[in-house]
Length: 216
Image (tube, rainbow, N blue to C red; front, top):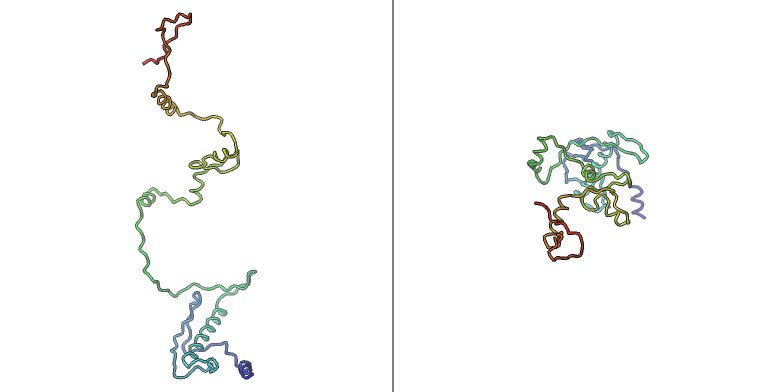
């Protein structure tokens, strides 16, 4: 009962914080700088022996509490507050306290040969969407985008799986490959045969065959 009575009669701390040296704030970082020294000769007035802390610990607790209260007061009094459907928003200003880095700022990398060439010619790097659309074309017949190279070019794999016939009604024949294929077939003895000119006498009454060789 004595503990409950002590908590009930405990005085509330003052909202207004007054320090010999005023705080300096960086509201963007939620930072409050306290330049007042901490003395350990006398405990803080707001400390209580029920906390079980010594004089230094009690004063650190009181100093941290005053700093947090001063920061909250500064935020509510200087920053614009707006009410939105998502809730009440508080707009913070820009930061002005430089924060230290663990490592130095990396040096800029020298441009590559391609970057130098592109800078001279005024070539701008393409976006990811432009690179993706470069290898595709729109098929008005199917109403889909199809690849122009690589696997499933022109959607032929999809059409083959669906059992569809070849889409192009006219296919250009490569004459060079056609000629190379014929010459390769004749080199093994299975090429075009020449008709015999009548060496065996065969008087069967048939017409004499013409020589089928090519003229050189």
